[in-house]
Image 1 (cartoon, rainbow, N blue to C red):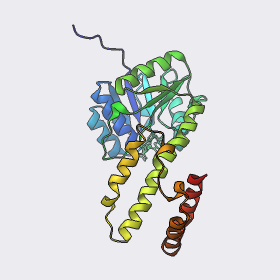
Image 2 (cartoon, protein in one colour):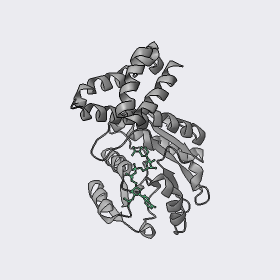
Image 3 (cartoon, rainbow, N blue to C red):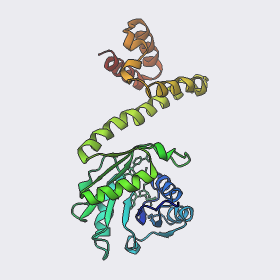
Image 4 (cartoon, protein in one colour):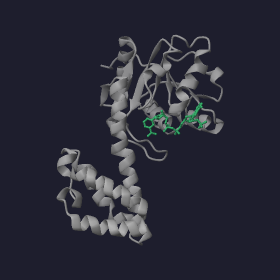
Length: 264
Ligand SMILES: NC(=O)c1ccc[n+]([C@@H]2O[C@H](COP(=O)([O-])OP(=O)(O)OC[C@H]3O[C@@H](n4cnc5c(N)ncnc54)[C@H](OP(=O)(O)O)[C@@H]3O)[C@@H](O)[C@H]2O)c1
């Protein structure tokens, strides 16, 4: 027997950057109707709309009123400004608006809309890398229980991992996410620079990097710490600091700070 389709919302994507692209592709893959894409940049709006087989616009005043859900995937600093502009348009006042930011409270919408919430996929999105969307945690929140429910239904269509997370929790989660992704990636960049400046390929370090990430999938990170700082191996630490102070002074300070944090 054919399964009944859940009532899925008609979606409009405001923004055509990295997150909008990957979210849009996943919505299309799961047959959630995306009816329009907005971007200030015509080329980007048209390119994503073509992929999603929908309309494109560069004019916020031309945003269709026929959608059920408006997803703002714009720069964090632009969410309030875009919401304010959209709220002046007839026919949008009672629609459901969400944004995709980890750091911005849902209440950014409060002066402008009655129905608002959050649709935050906790993953790092880059232009040319296709993520396994079904495994991405999607953090959901909404002002009203009914909207929370419809966002949960939609998120469950896209991913196996859907979490109700309020503004306060999401702000904290975002701090943790910065450590997990942004800072660790910066460490990889420093390692790549030091290696490549010395004609050592970064490939030598990639298996170590991968194993570091894999082993914390099954164990607490604090129990997996290795290296001179956790061993309190002062000789090795001093040797590294002498090298860094001579060649990479800015990294020496970072090395010292991180070593102290590990050994505490
Ligand atoms: N990328 C990630 O890994 C990731 C992960 C989780 C959550 N997020 C969140 O998702 C949102 C979008 O991030 P992103 O990485 O997709 O950013 P992005 O690739 O830099 O794209 C930003 C989008 O915002 C638009 N924009 C910027 N300022 C605007 C303004 N004043 N008015 C209208 N549109 C404006 C840009 O339009 P133009 O192209 O015309 O400049 C572009 O479409 C952010 O809230 C971010 O925190 C991102």
